[in-house]
Image 1 (cartoon, rainbow, N blue to C red):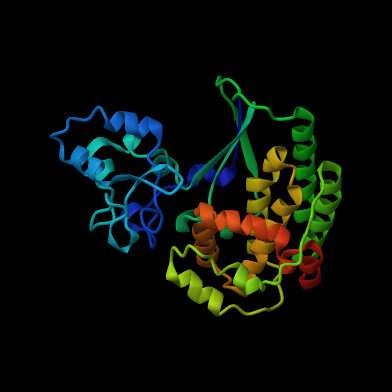
Image 2: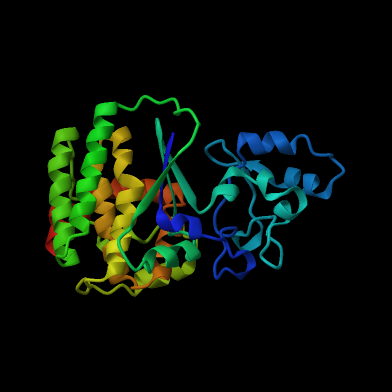
Length: 318
């Protein structure tokens, strides 16, 4: 298998209790089957086993979750903002989400792409403040390709198209011109993949980001204070767009919706411009949206239905 990752990936390190935010607060964590199987082997007399059993529950979708403590804190997050489960039985036995956060892993048969998300403030600082273009490194492993039903021709088409998208993004033009070119390129590519219906739901750009599931009230305050202004031609804005192109573009092999993926890159730059030009703002957006299934499903729907997020509307504001 080929493993592809950004060159900065190896430099990421969790700062645990020193973190200005907490990935152990604000959202529910699923208890995956592998972890549950291990918990069932623990001695029932162990305090950590008893604590685990007390907080296991089911959500509205039937997933097994850990019930949150007051202030939406993980029930294993102690007063020093460290994980009692990690301390008691080792980090390798914490839930899959906890072991991998803020990393994301996308498998495409014989290719695996990994990265880190803006949802972690340390990762956000790294990505936002890159001093050059996003670059990648590859390695080969003996791991067999994952079972899949990916159409090989579509995947290769998208992989080549993503290279073109990065070429557009890394030109010397103003970032607004590059984003326009990306949208136009994605629109043409979309016609080759599948139909794309855009609606005219009358919702403002600001209301798009008033998420029904609020994780951090600071995000709502930032949205309330949103200001429309010109986009600065900064490397940070390029880095934001590159993050979305890398993380989401190839996922179009599964749903044939490449235009929405490129829209996310453009909107990411607008979020940074209108809501707060710093890594912390993009971090808050990511935590609120990328890591809330409810908010993300709503956002994906609005990418096609909201009039303010239509391709034509985005081109007009660039």
